Length: 318
Figure 1 (tube, rainbow, N blue to C red):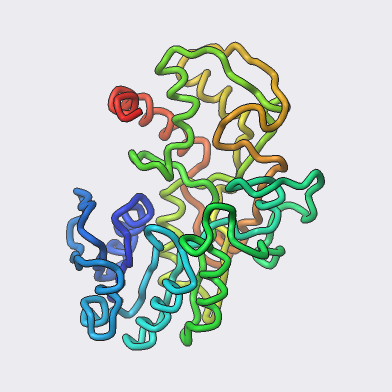
Figure 2: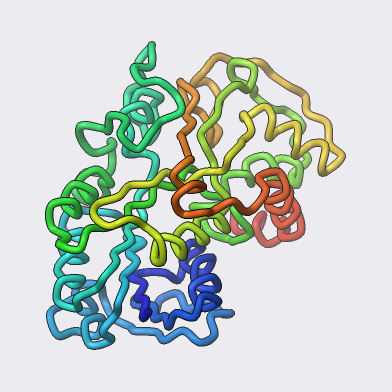
């Protein structure tokens, strides 16, 4: 198939393309050209602003894709979803794949993800299934610029061919990119020789993470094997670490010792500072899409090692 990425120059696209090419697909990446990553051979690049690229008769349509993957660079909106659906209809694309997020679930809002006001008691059982209640509105600060719930609803109502909607957790991986650098919070402390570690509520916080390699495999698998119609799928590692568990793993890997300072929830500022544990059911990912790799422990250690090897440049970047 001819597979077109809208966006795709970031970590998710870079992790997906090798699997698509290995499966025999042709691939093109439609993006502004502001970021042109190396190591993307055998991939055609279509340059322009999104509105120009997806317009009727524009570069994306002329490329005649059989499948379209939208990473919603710059934020997911209902308008972008309708653009994706219209492009798919004009091209006769047999498959649309949209990259959403686990943040669509009401439970994530209850847990104060993205500055939502937390609830004292969570309302939904874990693990979160694809039919679990979703947020009723955009996250604070997102508004019209970014709202995965609005994007999903618009896509469900507009895409004649249906769409696979992938909902990744907190992505991590060996890329210098703000969306995958959460573990740098801990590795950076070691690099700066900061032993003090604020540990809220014993470090029991967990926000389901996912290796970017697993997301890449999920995108490629969805192009080939996702069921027809509107089909959401959680994309997360089959096991994970609490914040305290990650802190221990980093210390053990880098031969470090923390001076732990117990604090209440909300007192510390770390990337997993959620009021309630967030963990999703990933059986669809494994049973329907067949995505089993990579091993979460090995992938997390690889992330820690990459961050440590690149610590000097990351420290300079602030």
